[in-house]
Image (cartoon, helix red, strand yellow):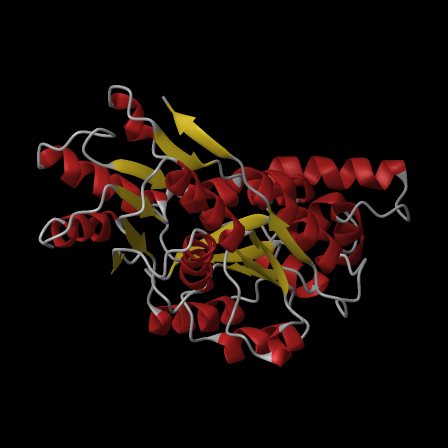
Length: 335
């Protein structure tokens, strides 16, 4: 069955197509009688307005593109949920993309979102696409960086950023272990190619310097993945000197760390203490793990991102002054 056209609706209601368009757009220039006839014609013919035609006329698609490094990570899904709950009230929908921590794929996704004419872009970048992201922003497209900043270049400081205070959180986490007497620390870090990896690692090093320790016993790059956490434990336990505590700077890596420690027959915290940047719910299955973790706020970050997007898209702010917001942390202990 062919879809009804606006011309057929106009003929049925005995009005012009322009009048039908005015009714669809809730114009006040239409009498109640005409509005009734058009509405009845739409219902009779089961007419559905073309979203594409409407977007071309309004110069809006009501779509917001979101690129995250791992679409299966609950942290990024919580952020996305906060965004959706905020912008959805104004008729916007989200288009999700996962870069898989691959900068080449991320570049292709940025190109795709541009071709789809999205009204804004939110990105937790895998790194390496700073010029392309900055160019999209300069073209007038609202771009908000979430969780991760770009390369340290002066012309990129004009972009909006909503993230965590990564260095301070990692500092607090490491300090807690040091206060408990653990000086032989193993660190499972994220990739240095992204800001979260660099900043959290620096927070660990700052805490150790303040404690009079030059460097951790071992540092392993876990790539923000479960598999990376598993490999980290295997590598750490191959060393002659084993750590008495592990700082894992991402909850996905921490899950891998816990899996491998338990598989190896080690007990937490009697054999090795754990501190995690982000809660790992699986830790609650352990008996008295005394697992320290940073209490993150991804949903609140998403809500703030959504509010900022609406402000930018409604041009309530000219965008000359970028918005920078860093969420602070609290340390909690899973007893």
